[in-house]
Length: 257
Image (cartoon, rainbow, N blue to C red; front, side, top):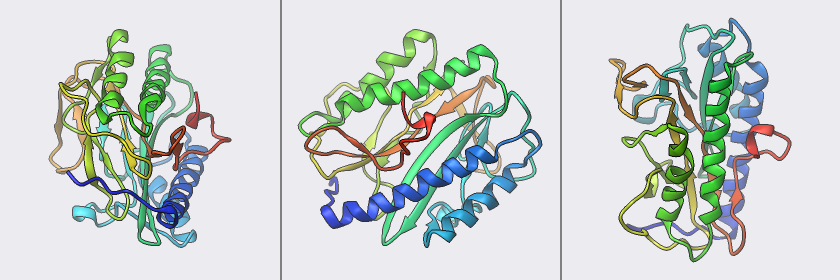
């Protein structure tokens, strides 16, 4: 496993790509309403990303046809935008990547559409909190799988399950780099973390059972039991001190606890 260490200039490029991702998510969040289609959201995202001098990381990646992933309710990840209309009470995971100056930013948020049922609202809040619990260990000298364990330790006591077939990853020049980042406890501590590493940490948490499958479109991942699923992701920079979230906006309530 060769984990890329970014230098100061590379980190600045990643900050710029990360900012574009964070801003795109903010634009999308404010576009959510009853009746909007996921294809409309995709067009909004692509227009904004390109207006910033970047290109969508996902479009064309392994033939993925769209700029963003839009996963609604029981869809976990990799939902393909189309004619589906959002309705009040839905949740939608919006996964965004932007590529500029040779580097990628990658982040996802699960947002509410209108007012949610109380248990759904808690699922979103607790998945987000699971991410923030995990990055307490995203520090120089700690070990990668301490992050993994912290997510499981936080979310599973609520009765939730964690998707195991899909994991986080390093990110930088390539959208998917080493290391692989599980979101559940491992047998070892994993590799030691060093300043300059950039990690996409992205717990996927189900209200019901953990088992998932891929639909016939060969992309969309859904829960077997059709239970709701929540996804929260940031590109995280390991520093000599506290971790830096390269894809978070300080004025967005969904980027903080």
